[in-house]
Image (cartoon, rainbow, N blue to C red; front, top):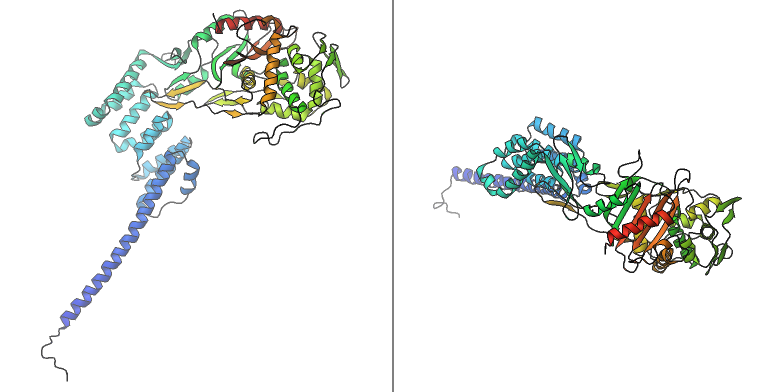
Length: 579
């Protein structure tokens, strides 16, 4: 029997317990929703942050696909849209970026990106157009950071008054924290007010060119050098370039060209720094002829032909990662080790029903070295026949013929061309002998000489050593990237010895330079029409034992290379080695 006399019971207590239970469930549900919501917020924030980091690190290909899918929290949509605009900006698509920023401005969308990092990135790279666009978008929001970078843009666009107005709006604490940068900006603004900004310097920090604000154009301070590409970059936003050129050497070469027309490029080995690039073309030719003007190089091509013959004559080429795919024509009758030498040069050779003529009868040509030294067309026509068109064409392409231009930042160095379509025996003989159908630029010819000087190792030629922004902070510095064109060191050595024989052989085309110090390795070429004046072309390197320089020059209408070209080279050596 149950006794309830000591038990109290109330419907009010029951209702309180039910309310507490409901409140606990609601609280648990709210906490679960908050956790779920917070997780998605963190996930969306992490996604936005990751895309920011990708854009800042230049990993645009990774950022692109992620920008196709906006995050779910609505308050991240603004950040996402701004990142899409920044993606366009980082890719250099300024009109598209400007349209996106303008739409964001009209919609009044709030964002919370780390904008200062992007502003610093664009300024650090000297990308003033991008910086100006983004700083202009941020300016209506206020803040010292946007004003400061806007001031830098105004100065970079040669507007000192605009820069000073922007600086005047900075807060006192910000000005105090950035006093050194403000002083550098003030110094740059003073140079703008003086009307002249020196911005192009040689390897010794001597001025090569300055920008005249009154005339709105650049003035070169050294002869024979085209500053137009640098002027175009300066107009996009002021910057300071330090080049590998030597201003004193450039002026000395100008004196060598008194009464002459032509081009010259001098490379400093091993990294192929361009220490002289002189252009004095005839009327109507480009001001940067040393880098762009193509011409017939004559017998200079025989360097590649000889290497092709040596590779063919020595048997199949050594296979390496870079040599995979090299084709070799089957040797002609009589080829093999020893090949076509010795041979008798009667001064002409019948090829394909036509005659190839020499400037003189060479008589007995003992070996390949003597063939190069005397520049025997008969010998090289036979070498071409031994090698075959495919193997010769492949090797020419390895030495940058029929390929894209060599580049250095915004500069372009044109390379040579030849007819890549296989023709008859006469075409092959002409190609191997350099008698026609091949063109080169002077910079390409110098790069060719440098490759032989360094046994097939190649450094892309460069002119820009470093670049700095208006606060003198560097945002570009050249880094050398060597590559190996071929692994045939022994064959390169044999060509090098043959280039030395051009000078040292008694009947070599460079014999007028015999006995000079340092020891030379060269190849001469004579091209052009005798009626209009023959062009003298010479490439080479020196000293032979430990090459320091590689060079190429062309004297337009000056006469034969073995006479007039050799005389010019003698004077050039006196400039390089005055003692």
